Length: 110
Length: 329
Image 1 (cartoon, each protein chain N blue to C red):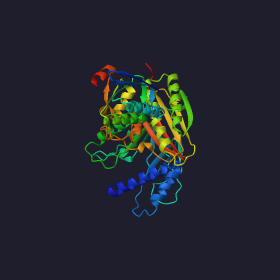
Image 2: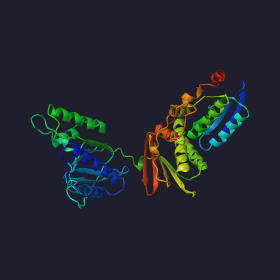
Image 3: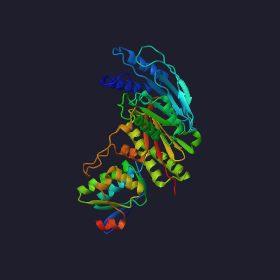
Image 4: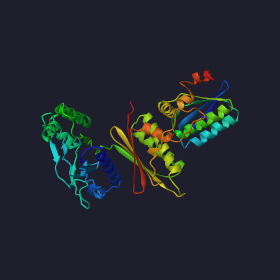
């Protein structure tokens, strides 16, 4: 799992490469927490290169969204593949997160 | 079941519970029947009784051992349309007398054979002229009608009996079960792999990595690969985090078998006896701040797999998962 961060229009765009499961959840959690502590309030997670996500990964995202929302920030996500989309649908996460098809659409929505 | 009404219904419920309880203990079918008979016969002051046909099938070979305790014969329709009647009795009706030793018989189903178990409410269904539907009529239907599926077979028997009875009131219960042996044998297995890991979260990656390679080798669709790896992550996480009460090293065994159109996965662990399939699903409609994730993992496992079974044998939890798969296009 690789985590890449770039900044665009004041938005931190985070890309996950690989899979987000119990093995990679701790490092992902650290990376997101570090970003928020550094003061990021607009975070976009691009799932383009994410193969799949398990509930251990969802837990991290839920935690990040709560922390960010308490600080008045926003978390958005884009480019979910079929499996990731299905996980979001089954878990009901589709309705609690703002999801976008493309990075551009997501950036404009901030 | 002897007689009808509430007393009979309760008697039936007791028999069913006893059967489930006894068959789960992995005894032979004759032993199961003997034990049920002893339980029911003991202080059976109402003198009610029940006829029972029960069998245990080896799904890999199609071999069946069965015990018939006073029930009407079970029928087998071979793939070529030939009929066989399991006429042997292995003891009397259940509930008559304590201490009887029931015996058992053997038969084997081959691919495409169907076994039909039924109550005499079918063959003894009467029309308004008091004529009986009869064994002959049922056997004729079974051998002469084109066979398509167990579901259709049961459907066509129901229709035939209903049509025969016409205006006559139903006098007895009509119950039947048809099972077709589709024959998953070792020869149909394309490939398999087995892996043993220790109860450490960092070991899960070995399984997902091995499955990725297996998937690649057999060109499974990416969506299936992802779903299986999510399932491995959820199941193994549960076992490792909640399955053990000591701090010792334990082994978890993972078996993956690939057949023509489906994958069978078995996860075996020696942790506390626990059926994860009984974990209630989470409320997925709550908003961000109320959401809790307990139960979500197993909820996903159930959604992603076509079938899931749990068993506990030799002090081990055995979770079996089946999913139909797609090959890469």
